[in-house]
Length: 340
Ligand SMILES: [Zn+2]
Ligand SMILES: [Zn+2]
Image (cartoon, rainbow, N blue to C red; front, top):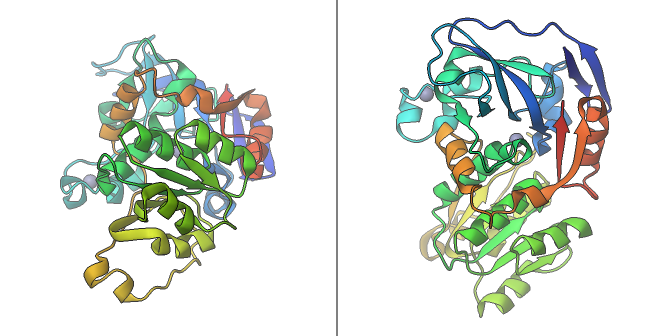
C-alpha cells in the first residue's frame, strides 16, 4: 500500500509499505478521509519520531475484522481514535483521560496518511465509532478536533451568556468559536494575524475578529458593556498569546490553554493577578477522550454545526506534502483533508 512518510515539514515522501496484517480482536480500516492537524506541522514536536506516518483524524471503512470482533463488521463506516485510555487508572477515574499512560502508548498503525490502518484490539474495544448515515467521511474526521474542543469546553464549564475571547483562529480556534456559539456563549471576540482567518472567525460565530496589534480589552469592554472575557481560550502556541491571555480575563474568569507551545515558552504573572478578588482560574485541555469523540459525531448530525464549510482543500494522498505546506503557511487554508 502507499503511505505518506513524514521526514520533516518540507520532506514528505510517498512510499510503499506492506499492508498491515489483521490479528485477533483487530480491524483493518481503509482510509477514506484523513485531516491534517495543526499539530502535524509542528516540526519540533513531530521530528523527534521521524520518519513516521502521521494522521490521526481518520474516517474510513472496515475491510477486515479479526477473530473475536463482535461490535463491527466488514463494510461499516467508522472513525477511530488513535490514542485510547485504560479507563481504570487513577487519572481515567478522575476524568483526566489524556494523562493516562495507556493513552500515551496506544496508537493505530501506521498512521492516517496511508491507504490502510490497523486498529489494535484496545482501539477497537473503546476507540471506534460507527459514522451516522447523515455524516460524510470528511465531516467525520472532525470527530477528533471537535472532540478536543468539546472536552475543553467541558473543563472550562462554559455557561450560556458568558463572554469568550479566542486567541488564535486556526482550525482549533475556529471550532472553539463555533462550538462556543452553539453552546450559547455571550459575546465572542477572536484574535489572529491572518485576514482570511479573521473572516472565517466571523462567519462561524465571532462577534468581532481583530489582528493582535489591536487592543482586545477595549473591544471586549465595548461589546460587553464594560466587562472582559469570562473565558479566554489560547488556541495558538505563540508566546505573546500565552502572556496576554491573563490580561483579558474578567474577575472570576478562566484562562484555558488549548495549544501546544514550544517547550521553551514560559509565562510569568503576579500571583495577585489570579488570587483574592481576581479569582481567576488557569487550566488546560489536551486531546479528547472516547466519550468526546462520540459526542462530536453526535453533535455533527445537527445541520447547524457547519464543520464541512471549514474544509478548504481536499487532496489525494500523493499531494500530502502540498497539504502540509498549505497548513504550515496558514494563509488561505483552514482544514485540509487527504483522501487516500
Ligand atoms: Zn488533531
Ligand atoms: Zn488510564
